[in-house]
Length: 206
Image (cartoon, rainbow, N blue to C red; front, side, top):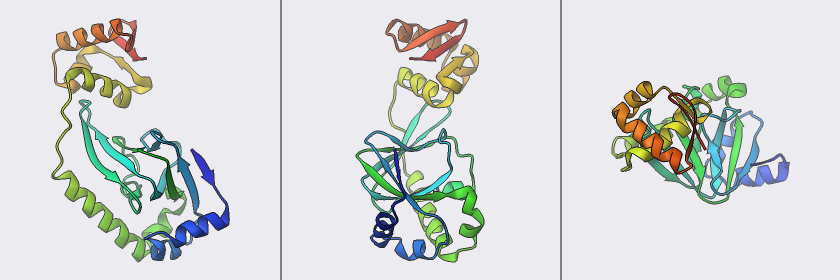
């Protein structure tokens, strides 16, 4: 990830954005962020809560449920908004955006400018349109088919603190499987070098 504060590059990017009119109406400090292929553009683990507009490249947006099931929400290109839900609901812990190729985004802080954003009718109209499109897409999406081992790996990667599963019973409940099934998967994964056993009922993703 590379942050760019060059005023000319920022101005050129804003001028070429399909959301130029909205951006021009906002009194906020804007900068650019460049992401490499496969880098996470946004995730529940990011340090800063940012509003971002994809301007170059494309990103894959997906949602991870508590049982490790992965839903692909969309493949987003130029003009797509990231952080629109976080304007109203800052603690969204399940949605990820990953660069499918080198990506450039216009970005600014949500916490710093929340009041300014909420008082700008052009910005709110843009957010409303974006959220409506996402809700429409979510009502027709299906979970990507996945095996139990794939769900266990996703559960550990995205839902377990420090990617460490603690407690077979609780994890089996979330994964909708039996404790015996989960233990078998963990034993197989340990033998394959995918996880490391740290103690009774405790495994860390390798």
